[in-house]
Image 1 (cartoon, one colour):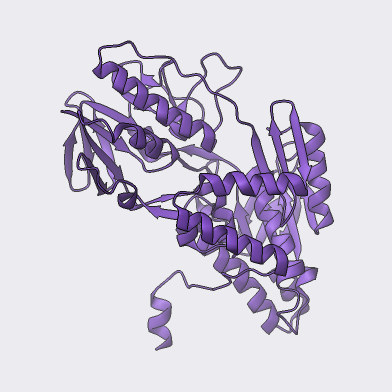
Image 2 (cartoon, rainbow, N blue to C red):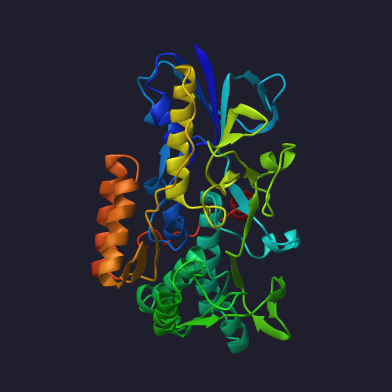
Length: 420
């Protein structure tokens, strides 16, 4: 049997594994730091208290129950020995005949790594629950204080980065403060919360058409979000952000401005692009090592396209399946095929019942686009249980303007020790 190792249980790795697990000639090992697959497109819903973490995550082992040729390991890969064909982890080494690397990317603070403490990004469940804690705690602290200036600072929320994640976070905070929390507090008026979306470029949603990006900006302003474009953040700390020479006092800063390659990619001595993503051959393999495939956000694919493909879930899913196909073709002594991306469009949601969808020449915006966004995300959620509970939760939130996951969970377990 041929040994295939997949590093990463995200969209690319999981779709590759689903295709390879049914081949009895393959001994498949899936390695991930966590024991679950995370549906990242809905991560902001956890951060904004609309969904619980378990509703957008699925244990990887449960997806491969009954496949005796599949082994799932919760470990962290620290290096790849391409000469010995080994994947090295903190607890040992594993040999492979074929390797699929799909570890994704991490947030980039553009040389200001110290900013992460004050402005968390949104890539993991831990970050999502931390953002939820900070946002909800800001309202709780504002309710207690009698200092009007401090209250204004606590009720000011700054999101840095005008891409889909930044837009979705800003829209969710704007709606939550004006509708969900409006009746929950007596001393403050959550509707007076100030939400600022800051984008360094000339407009938000740069990957979308200019017309619809402008429409989204107007929709955000309609729910109280201030959109600042052509605005570069030059500094930030626990008290606020500095934009040029203007100082904005705020207690909650969220980061959605950029990404860079994961640490594992940086350790490989291969050709990379400006973001640190690994440049791949047309068939997604490493030019120097055809038995190694790079998929998803970790790869930089620029063959037959105007610019390298962006880090989107549909691209990762297609690349994962294609890498698996090429491994199967190699086992049959057939030539590998070049990857061709089928563009399924892009979408972003703006609050509770508005979204923007672009698929080819089709442009949709508004409530219908939001329902389409909802159905597509429900379809791609793993497991019937997840789909059912998310649909019920969304239906309730839509009809009642409520958010059922408004729990503040302290980040540090020592908090409880101090209280007891």
